[in-house]
Image 1 (cartoon, one colour):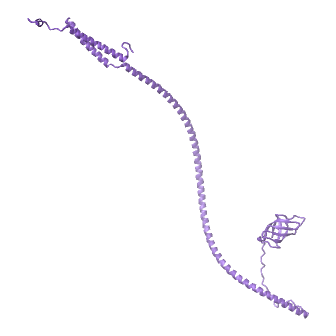
Image 2: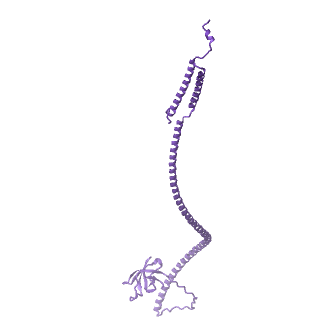
Length: 292
Length: 52
């Protein structure tokens, strides 16, 4: 074997080992592109899916946004209507407020006037109470005087009774004496002349007592034309007395008179007089009065 | 005259078998490299010659 061959063998071996080392190193350190491809493909598929999902979500979101927009527009319209209505209500309320304030002012003035009037009334009441106290004091004083006068009157009435008894006794004695005197004079053929006072008695001029209308008024309750009797609605409690005459009238027309025969506390019965058969007859409901 | 006299006079040389061994070694390295590359290709791409 020649030297050149040997050298070539050695060189070939060295170069082969060197190249093999390089190849092994490269292959050992080379990236796994398939795995990388699969990973990227997986990432790509995932990204595509995410994209589709995102597009779906986007579409859904767009639809929801549209629906929300429509809903919000309808809500805005409703709220605008409400705002208009509330604005109108606010205007009405402000007008009512102004009217109420005005009315409150009126009531305030009325209350002030009422308070003033109340103060005046209270003052008047206090004055009246003071007068009442004065009048009560005067009444007490008058009661005392009345009691004293009543006592004196009773004493005088007792004296008058005593004097009347004495007067009766004197009259009886006078009558007895007169009878005896008449018997004695008749026996002598004489009569007693009327006594004439020696000096005429002059009485003082007195004013006649004033006349006052009785003023009783009532109604006819029952009429008995056959017996000419009638019943009236007032009695002894109202001051009706026996033999009192009442005039029966209807409106402004005179009908007849009624003379009371029997009096009861709440009614009275009397006979009808001055009744003209040719004219109107009395009936229940006609007015009766003591004065025309 | 010793038996080794002839050897003392000769030049020292490497036997040819050594180069055969060197060549075998180189061949083994290349073969191992090819096997390693094939193994890597098969494990990573599932095939040896086709493009996946």
